[in-house]
Length: 240
Picture 1 (cartoon, helix red, strand yellow):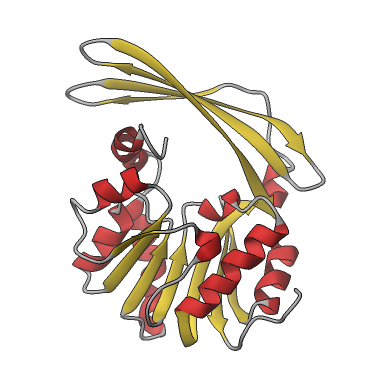
Picture 2 (tube, rainbow, N blue to C red):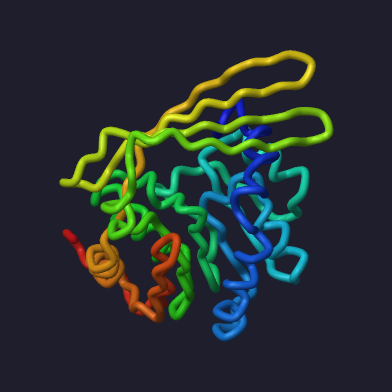
């Protein structure tokens, strides 16, 4: 999905994520905290980044996928960096850091999560704002696994059917596998499959890690996902 099928991601995800609505939800926090320079971690193909730039923000995007960044360059003016969020290294500091789209769910271990949060801390100025969302463990524990789910997306030049199934849930670390099947129909019909492992976070555990890594919690929002708004107030504690 994030390499050979980056183009497909770019076509269907505006029908899965409401990027305009996401910006509307962020705008108040960004304005209230005088944020102008923004680092978007896991920026994907740059759809949210492009909206932020249209609103006058100076944005740098960071993503692990070269193919996703290649697409982002077609719509974004800001700097784009290929990095793993566990190794976030940027020049200067930012007023706000965004890690959205539940991308933090790829941090499968506490070590992964803590390394990412340390990098986020380094990238922010003192008092800078972190807005992060994750799969919510409370919802994941109620989720119906092993059920096939399907979405159909029709465009002028093709039809894409997306089927997904979650399985192999592990209650100990709140991880599970997701398998996708994409049926792409245009001049020909082809089927592509992908799978990955994801993790959910308990709100108390994520809050604790944020505190250990030099953040104070401003707001916690539980909806379809767990969203935290935090402020950098210090440096990460060693050994946490």
